[in-house]
Length: 540
Image 1 (tube, helix red, strand yellow):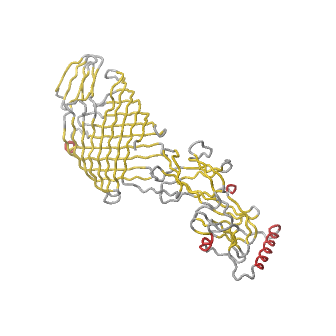
Image 2 (tube, one colour):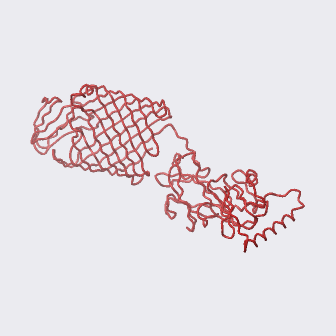
Image 3 (cartoon, one colour):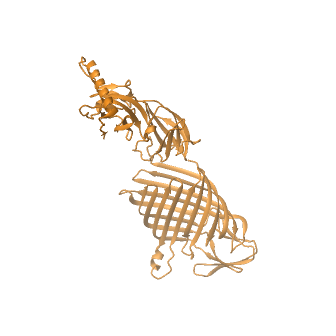
């Protein structure tokens, strides 16, 4: 809405108004003989702007003029520009406010028109003379810059940018962009000239900046492609993102890392304080049409270690993480985000697991009931194989109902249903304890179990720097249902937690903590937590 500020009627203001009135009368007399009086007095030749001429813009504006008033009109080179205000000043004082593309009624007189946003010193200005009953068109001595930030798929991204004059005297922004495809990029009203566009908030940045030229009465549009916080390229044309989400999503990441860790009560790896180095790869492929979701996740994580342990021999290099995982999921969303699901997942190892000690020892293997099933004596540095390569091997299939929501960088999910689980140990055994020269092991037998499963997921991402994710998977077989009221209750579960702090495009610091029980025969909880400096790269 236009705001009108009354004029004082004394001093210099009165004399200027008197002069303006004389000018108006003389102009009216000069045009008296004309059969039709023009309603617009453009100070410059009209330009076609945003597909609409200045006259068309005037014809579409229906702002009424109070009796005895004229009007100032600033045509738009880019259609409607929300937030691009116009200040009309008389002798340095703002007497009226309005917007580009609409009339601003003022009394006759000489005015300075400021166009743009932000402090007055940053706005383009021009001088106009307003005549009673007439609309004067201010000079388009400004340009409009619209910029959108997108990724390589032309999907909008959240970030900030600033625009500074080439001499650094004027800085516009920072301007924040949005991932909302419906939101139009903010328009900057700039005086004609040369400018520096810089990604981020530093107008003097030596990197991630480009030079641009803004012309008077022109609309300049850029689409800036950004990847991992860096400008990849710029594109001309409509800045709105052309991105149409594909139902397909594919990502493959490979990398390597080093870490320090402490592991306790592990039967498929080792226990103690370790220094580790290794490699990993993860693949995710998904089809999500909104109603249907099909997803495949595959991961391989391998690490070797240097071990210092209170229960076994120290050694310079040995495997400590050896895990292959895969999950195939299908989810049909019946009502909004809720619907039935079916999935199959598996865990395995690649290499055999061995135990050795610098002292002679006797290895005694018992079954779950405590009966001795195998016993043998080993010399110092002899290797005892506890699991053959590829074992233990777990499969689990389930179906039920689940839901998952993603909003504001937060992910929440839960599902539950019936499941069956197959555990294959290949005659393997895990180290339970070491007492003097005696090594106690528990033999694990293959099993096929039926029961119920549940899974919960929570995660969030903060400023694209910190990512935290926690997933809990639970399986309870039918035997556990029967023993729940009076027997030992030891369900199979896995609770994975990961926090990642991004250092750069290829490096991050990662902390993982895993609490689990892989078999009901395992009495203690298995725990492992790890700090990693991870180096990684995305193949696609």
